[in-house]
Length: 271
Image 1: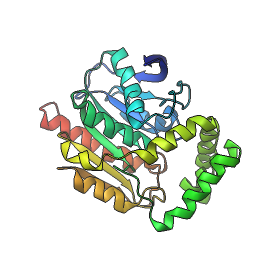
Image 2: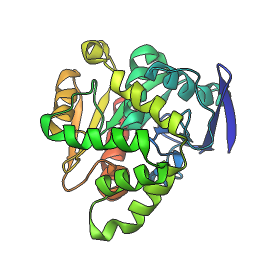
Image 3: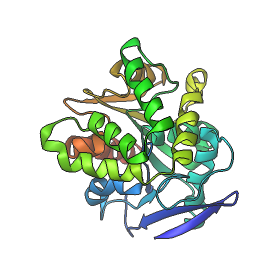
Image 4: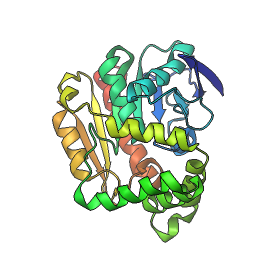
């Protein structure tokens, strides 16, 4: 466990190095309101095969908060700080939801630092379908007026709706409740303002879009469109998975991720 710094903001991260690996280390970026612990099941799958860096994005977990009303670019700059501290030139970036937006920003603004992007239940710009408007309004009302634990419980119930997901629901609710209201609002507004739709053609690196088929937060249509607009992008749809595919479908997710990374190693003559 360690801290790096970017523009006066302390960024908490964990590094799991490995001596012999066929490819670059993997940088894992979590979703809105959560933290690096989201990736525990991926660290277990990657252990001994690849170096792994997990971090708490600004305003989440143990990391400091960005000033003012930052854009996703501000989060992206902080996400690069651990790589600088570890003197890692190039990584495979995996981002979930908010983390996928940050990964996309890094891939477009700092392509020299990235071998590949894996974008999990993410998008290039927010479009709320008519069916999603009531849910969005409820979230805004809770964020404005309710205690953070109430918001956490409501969000967790939406992303882990099944009876056998009670423990996952509780953990997600606790992590979200640990956020300050301002930090959560900062990140939510950055997501709402995010729009790289017209820049997707600039991506000149391998991209893997992973989509939970049963995600009720980001539509499958939006994720299909994201993959379609990125030249050469791979699309993997995980049946039955919701918004947090690395947690609710770890076996299928880990296999899809490793297959993608292994294919890049082979192309580079490392496999």
